[in-house]
Structure formats: structure tokens, C-alpha cells
Length: 169
Image (tube, rainbow, N blue to C red):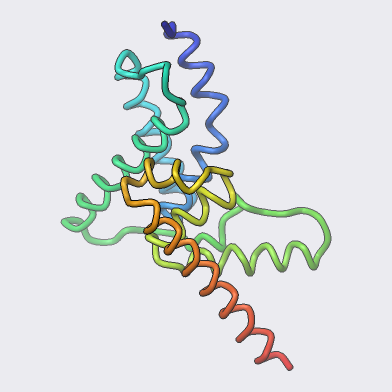
């Protein structure tokens, strides 16, 4: 049995990972922050529905994803989304060498240009370390679809970098 305080502590420890996932969905730091806040608020109001037998991160990722889907539906009615491109945010900044920083920005920009159906499984597997099966369960798609989307995302990124390298020669 999880207590309210334990639930809150566990959720707080997940915030960096939840924030990265929210950013991969929204492609905008301000929208990701709002999404994360809404999802945490929902989770806190429904914490008694959480089953401690299952990993909390998966439960939270599903809440974030469902909250984002609801937001997209709402935005179809609204005008002006006010989004900032993901490559202009500080969320994935690398502070090593200048070359590392440039490469990280390039990768971040290219991932941001991928369709959401490709970037979501790619980020969950490559950045968050989930297995294909876990991503399949989280996104509610067959494991073969997850594998195919990750393959297509990697292939698209490799082609984008190859074209860029060829163009600079």
C-alpha cells in the first residue's frame, strides 16, 4: 500500500524523465512544462487509483500521453498555438565541447523534425531506456510497430545527417 507522501516522493523523483517525455510530445518547452503540470495534478488527484504493483513511470507516461491527446483535440478548435521549436529550448543542452554542443543541437533539431509517431518511441527507447515491449505497452501499439517506427526514425536521422555531410563537401 502506497501512502500519499510516498506517492508524492516517487512522482517527484520521476520529474526529469517525465519532463523529457512531455517535451518529446509537445516539441515546445513551455507546452511541455504545462503538460507536465497538468499530468502531475491529475496524478495527484487520482493517486488512489495507482496500483503499486506496476511501475509508476509507466502510469505517469500514460497520463502525460492522454493529457496531451486531449490538449491536441482542444487546440483543433483554438487559433494560434504559440509553440517554440524544440531546437530553441534548453531541455537537451549539452555543455561539453563546442563540437558536442553543435552536434547535440543538430540531433535535437532532426529529432524534432520527425513525425511524433517516430520520435515518441525513439525517445522512450533511446533516451529513457525502455524496452520495445514496454514502449509497446505504453503507447498501446503492437511491438512490431514500435520496432518499425524506431527503425524508420533511425534511418531517417541517418539519411538526414548523410545528406548534410554530403552537402558540406
